[in-house]
Amino acid sequence: MKIKDLEYYQKLVKYKNFSQVANLFGVSQPTVTMAIQRLEKTFGVPFFIRDHVHKQLYITPAGQQFSAHVNVILNELEIAQQEINQSRSTKIRFGLPPIIGNYYFPSLTPDLMRQGLLSHLETYEHGSREILKMLKHGNLDIALLGSLSPIKEPRLTAFELAQYPFKVIISKSHPLAKKSQVNFSDLRNERFIIPDSEFFHEQAFKQACRIAHFRPQIIYRSADIHVIKAMVSENLGITYLTSLAITPKDSIASLETTSPNRQLFRLSAVTRETEILTPYKQKLWDLLTKNKD
Image (cartoon, rainbow, N blue to C red; front, side, top):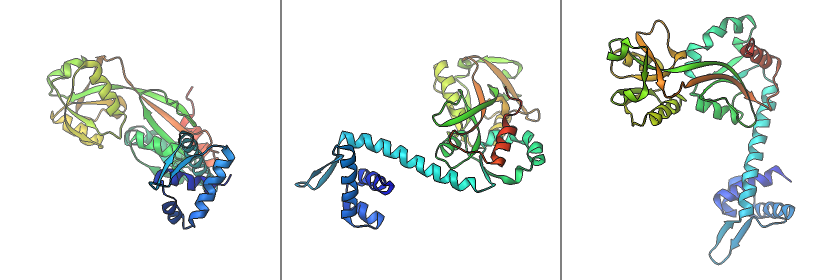
């Protein structure tokens, strides 16, 4: 079975036109036709039905099923090529979400410098959702990720490093500032300023609102946690953040929630199961996970 046959196949599933696929790859139409015939012969079933009267091409149920497998195969081959290329490099493609990068990662930098790792990091900063996607697609080697539940993704190895509770964050001049805790349902009339959809915070916030049975009034979204905290400090609204993002220097107050049940921001080091760690990557992985039982 040829890899190129599988590539032709996936494009034919997408475009349903032999001439278009042939032009896309710069080959003759019979080349694509013979590739599909080889695959159909190998598996003993037709993957396409050709309607010559209406000049239409239809994919069979078996063809749809095969396409799903081919997609996985081609994706794994692409990841394998990236990993092989990276195995020759001393660089580490490292995923780092903004909150973790600002409030957790700095404590690691002295050890990274002492072990000569800092100069080898190629850091990619995105929200945890995008970082997870990049890691699964082979675009990153190792990442620190935030999640609401333990990371149990196929073909990924995750090591949980810490847990931080979510808290309601308000201005020190807010009427609730004198309290230490609040029921989330009591916030139904508040104005919210929340992180945008790249962050797992949005998922935690939606869960809390759903359990409290109210639709929140969201007045602003931002990818910048510093902006959110500054707006909250000015009493323009309130927010829901992990305690990891709160520092003693922030001019804000934080409240525990009595309901919903305590939500946690779980911080994990993650890599792919198939990733062969080079000496530098292994040193980084060991540093991230040391003393974590």
